[in-house]
Length: 61
Image (cartoon, rainbow, N blue to C red; front, side, top):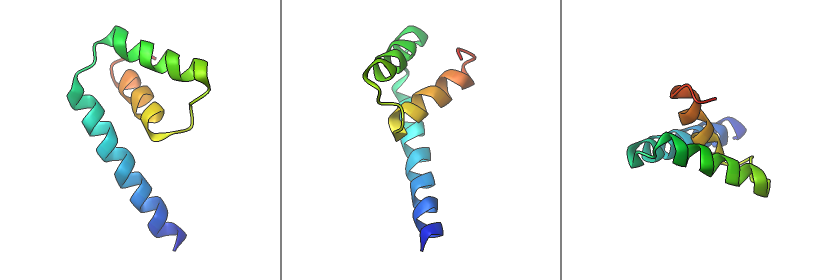
C-alpha cells in the first residue's frame, strides 16, 4: 500500500511542477518565491520542491 501512495505523490509533484513551469515566472520572481518560503520555514512541501527544481533547471541554484 505504501508504494501506491508514494507513486501517487510522485505523480502529483510532477503535475504541480508542470503547472508552475507553465506559469512562466521570471527568474527574479522564482528566486523571491523560494526565498519567501525559506524565510517562513515552509521548505518541505510540493510547491517549494517544484520551485527549487525549476530554479535548478534554469541554472539559478
